[in-house]
Amino acid sequence: MTNQENLPGNGADGNGALDLSGKHIVLGLSGGIACYKAAELCRALIKAGATVQVVMTEAAEQFITPVTMQALSGRPVYTSQWDSRPSGGMSNNMAHINLSREADAILIAPMSADFMAKLLHGRADDLLSLMCLARPIDKVPLLVAPAMNREMYAHPATQRNFVQLDADGATVLGVGSGFQACGETGDGRMLEPDQLLEDVIAFFAPKVLVGQRVLVTAGPTYEAIDPVRGITNLSSGKMGFAIARAAREAGADVTLVAGPVGLPTPRGITRIDVKSAQNMLEAVTERAQAATVFIATAAVADWRPAAPSTQKIKKDGSGQTPQLVFTENKDILATVAQSAAAQSGQLFCVGFAAESHDLVANAEAKRLRKKVPLLVGNIGPDTFGQDHNALLLIDERGSTELPRASKLSLARRLMREVADRMASRAPAKLKAGAP
Image 1 (cartoon, rainbow, N blue to C red):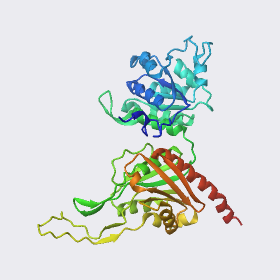
Image 2: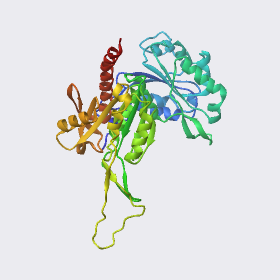
Image 3: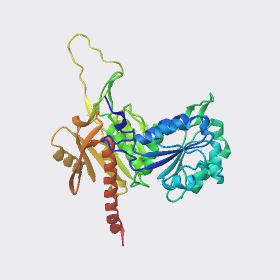
Image 4: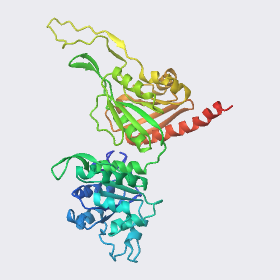
């Protein structure tokens, strides 16, 4: 049986390592039907390695009980500013001070429109709002997950409050769109627990790529033979999608150009779906000019049928096989690597080589042929469709092995490697441009 708790995206990196290990989260619940999602969120945070202290408003108790949240968090739930129980190891009847001082972050999920207004005006008439006001702003970040009716969400007062919340230093995690408990449909739903978990994990990730614009390709391409048949490969796109997520966690603005795969889009990135190698080339060429990092993980077809049939090719019983004429697809990585931005160092290019044998020799030859500063090699048959991989990084300094691990774990390591290489190249560029 699969251990769901250790799958990437469930708070673990796929190796059993927990993404929020050592983090202490104060989970605040304000009044709203979305409190039912807070129960699953609490459990997800704990599975990811965090300890969770739940604080509820009186209104939240109308939707879910403190008993439920205590059972899930394994800690007593605090609901009143007059609660005299010891908190944070102290018995001074100051839960609003003690609970906030031991937190690595306060996460309000759900945050109602009413509670948001309290935060904006510094009101503190219950334990949760008092705790948010009393927290050390420079040490305890505040993350909020709004949840409200679509009309409440769209109201000008609410939108002004969001702007001010951001100006005050809070991190607004956004909202979902869809069917609401009131029967209406639109924006304002609280994000799903797995989405919030991904956002919390990203919040704590080292921001080694802040200010960078990362363009990633992922998955296979599909080259049509006729309207119902085509040529493709076994690439699942999992490595490229993991890299897109890791780049976003590292603080980059990420665009993902994906071939035909059925993977969900990682949080916070822009996704462009394409089909053929030509489609992918056009999408990449259009967006590479605005990028500072290009990571080509897609397994792009080398050839395509020169003249796909407009109708299904049928056998006629003669035993004769159709004669296909192929033409070579333009190399996407080489095209981008030879651009003026890449040649000047303004665009850092990373290529991937999926080989079947002689990985070191073939990957190094590919790096030199395509003129990229970093080439990442792997054995294709060992990784296609799998959740784990092993990588070999090759650059002008030699090769570095990244042992077999989850693709998300490797993607995070690769982002650090890319950031280090970009930082080491910067002084040389400045020196070269100096008078």
